[in-house]
Length: 257
Image 1 (cartoon, one colour):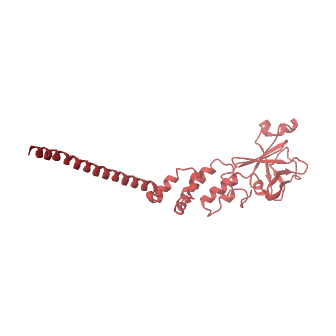
Image 2 (cartoon, rainbow, N blue to C red; image 1 turned 90 degrees about the vertical axis):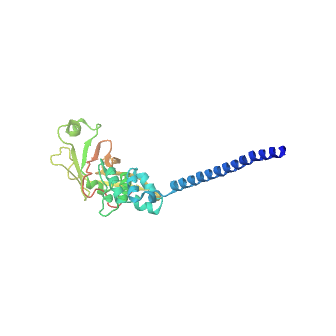
Image 3 (cartoon, rainbow, N blue to C red; image 1 turned 45 degrees about the vertical axis):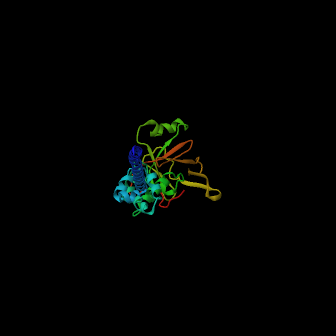
């Protein structure tokens, strides 16, 4: 009798412990399931399209804080992103930022009705162009000065070196002639003319490109800085006068390389 009572007491002690262990396992399992579910929900939120999550207006505000190159890359993400990332509201201030302080604004980039994204792209491409065209020569006013290697007589006549008056200016005309400001003491006369020489080899690669004033003068090599033009040889130098404010832009209408 006593033995049976002892066994019953032992059973009474063990059974609750087993039940408690199972309950704990059940709770732990439910806790882990909740954690996994939360992780899945968080992952779904992270993978959600930001455009759908934030909407077009907020997405546009985010893109306005990115650099132009980063914005251009978002054009390739989704078709829906393309509509936001190509918005004129987004690219108008970026064009203004790009054009700020530039000597010349390309005519091809300010055509009426041209999307601002295209205007930005054309501006950047044209700004790297080193092939000068007749439109570039004729659209700008050019400052002219001699280089220091010329005889002292010519340096003394050049305001660039003696600082006595405004710099000399030159003008390229559509008929291939060149003119000057009234009273220019070093002007070469009405016989002055110019030509643009470009030699192309296979596959359209430019081998030589220069501008020549008259046939007997050394040809001038062409270079650019901040979208301005400079043409120079050992004797003299031409620099385009900045005119970024000019309505309608300058240079060729069609993009050339």
